Length: 253
Image 1 (cartoon, helix red, strand yellow):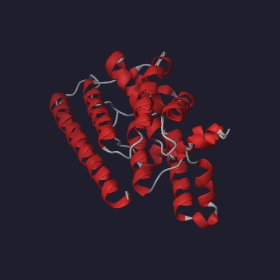
Image 2 (cartoon, one colour; image 1 turned 135 degrees about the vertical axis):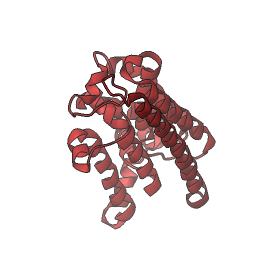
Image 3 (spheres, rainbow, N blue to C red; image 1 turned 180 degrees about the vertical axis):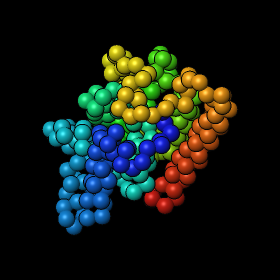
Image 4 (cartoon, rainbow, N blue to C red; image 1 turned 90 degrees about the horizontal axis):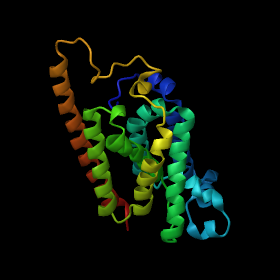
């Protein structure tokens, strides 16, 4: 579900929405951060989240911050999370519902920030990414038929780490993270209506490692898979800590 085994071409063909979002994120990062002399500074100024400007009628700022980021580590962090955790949902929900979930949770997080956040500018896809985590959280809690025990444990660890890191780092948009997560969990019943576990494999001939089948080495493989899952979870924790340490030490005044 979360371990990628496709080739680059297979990934692009199978997950067109995720690929498009990542391309858009990287495109605007390159334009806004590296080509400021070609209008990047103006694009950043027009698209960054600003409660003051939203109050003046610039409503598009509820949407545009989702595709803008505050540096290379920021865009890579959110894009990697989307790359890793988005595919199963794109397959299960379908492209239309996945886009609605991604943009809907990101916009909702920005709307809540407009009413309860500070006037400081904000940007990033974290609210939308946490919205996807919210859908997984609902699956773990109430739709266990859609997620295996191993993947349930992994995503739970990732969500807990993400929430903890949200409150540890003072520069993180707490409101966007938490309300993105909550909005994902709230819309999950609607988004997952009629969805079956097998839907995440319908467009690709991929063997689910937890699928029941005749394999004399099945349980040994499953034990090794669990070890790999916890290794990746631990590696993710270390990576997140390193990321926030890097931001604190090198990027913040």
